[in-house]
Length: 271
Image 1 (tube, rainbow, N blue to C red):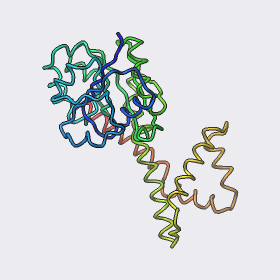
Image 2 (image 1 turned 90 degrees about the vertical axis):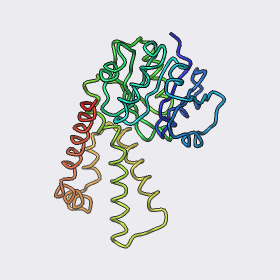
Image 3 (image 1 turned 90 degrees about the horizontal axis):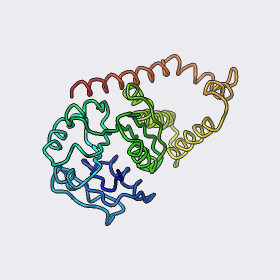
């Protein structure tokens, strides 16, 4: 089945990034039907497109579409799915779920034997540099899977994994931009604590992170090898790394990732 009408339930930042990606690459989607309880979300849509249709309700949005993007908070899924179930023809739609911790099984438990694909996008989608993780699903047509993959490739890169790995990867690609922001913030605050408040420092630190990541991505070396190349014996970097080890930097990241997975499991069990 050719998918040409996409309903977007919840028009927050992530949905807007997905929409802009679609418009930016010119995917063959005839209409984008929007519904958000907060109509003010529509005012920041950019660019405004003739493809947009503003629905009066969730039921209205679903009935107009052949594909439905569920872009709402995990805590609101039960309520949203209940409303969808009151719409005509809801069981014939393709559903794209981006709620953290919400399994395809949870969606199908509410809507019955529907086609649903689970995706975990991340915040850099807002600048077209996202990483989205898409769940392999044998119950979905190959053409539908490729259609959804193309949507998310419009705003970054995509990897696909088995669903039983989805909660564990949240802390790797979806929540992890926050770790990077926190790391950059810590460096800038550390510089300020030493009296270094040079103009352009934040930009310099961001460029350092980007450059380091690109160097690692383009290298055949492991992170450990590159660390060793920077940290000469008896030097400043070696001392800094020893201090990070003393404060259990790596262990802290690992524990944060475990906590992320545990919370995703909790959100799923609440449904």
